[in-house]
Image (cartoon, rainbow, N blue to C red; front, side, top):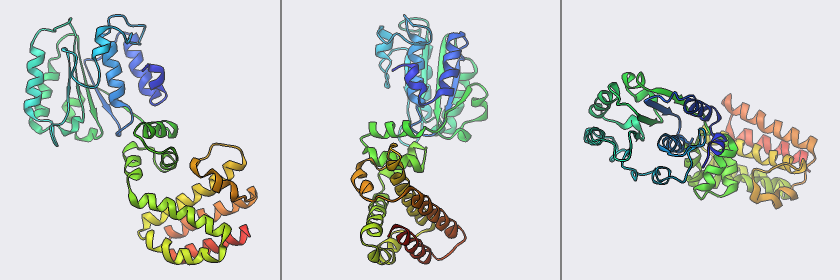
Length: 327
C-alpha cells in the first residue's frame, strides 16, 4: 500500500492528507465522509501508520517498522484503538472504554490515535461522550471518524474535526473493488456503468432480479439478430413479465443500450463491458452507422417511458425498428 496507489481512487483526499503530513499541519480530529467502499478506512489506516511510523519517507510510512506492521484494520497496536458499532449502534460504554484507554500513558511513545467506524451510529449518549473527548484533545492525539451519513453527526462534533469528503469511485476503481470481493469482471463492468456507488453496485451484483435481467437482454438481442420473428413474442412474454415497474423498465433499456454500445466498441477495437460475451458480440456484426441509429432508438424509447407511454407498445415498436435495421 502507498499513497500513489490510494491516489488512483481518491486523488483529492490523498492530496489533502499528504499536504497536512508534509507541512506538519495534522489536525487532532478528522471526519471522513462518503459512501461505502470509497476508501475511507483504507486511507485512515494508512494515515495512522504514517502518524506512528518511526522511519517515514516524506508522507509515506516505511511499512517495515514495528508500528507500521502492527497498525492494521483491527486493534493490534496498544496506542491505536478502533471503535466499531456493537450491533446497530456505538454505545456509551464503548466511548467510556476509549476514554479510559486514553487516560493511560502511551505504551510505546507519546502518540495515541483512534478510529471510529460508522460514526453516524453513535447513540446520543456516546456522541456527547465523544464530544467531551474532542473538546480537550491531548497533545499528539489523532482522531479519525468515518461516516456515510454526515448529516447524522452532531454539529458540535463536526466543528471540532476537519471534514474531508470522499468522491464516488471511478468506474475502473469500482470494478477493481468489486473484483477484490469476488465479483465476476463482466458483472463488475456492467454495474460500474450503472452506478459509481459501491453500496448500490454491491446490491446489484447480489440481486437475482438484476442477474436475470442481464440474461433476458442478451437473449432478446440474440433473437433480434438470429430469429427476428420471435423477438416481438419474447417482448410480449418474458420481457413484459420481468420488467414490471417503471424503474425496472428503464433498467432494461439501459442494459440494452450498453449491449449495443459494446458491439460498437468491439468494432472500434476498444474495451468491452460484457467481456465474457465477446463471441456473441462478435457474431452480431452490425454496421457502425446502423448501431448509432439503434442506440438512438433505445434512447428515444427511454424518453417515451418518461412520458408514461405504454411499456409494451414502446418495446414492440423498438424491436420492430431494430429488426428492420439489422435485417
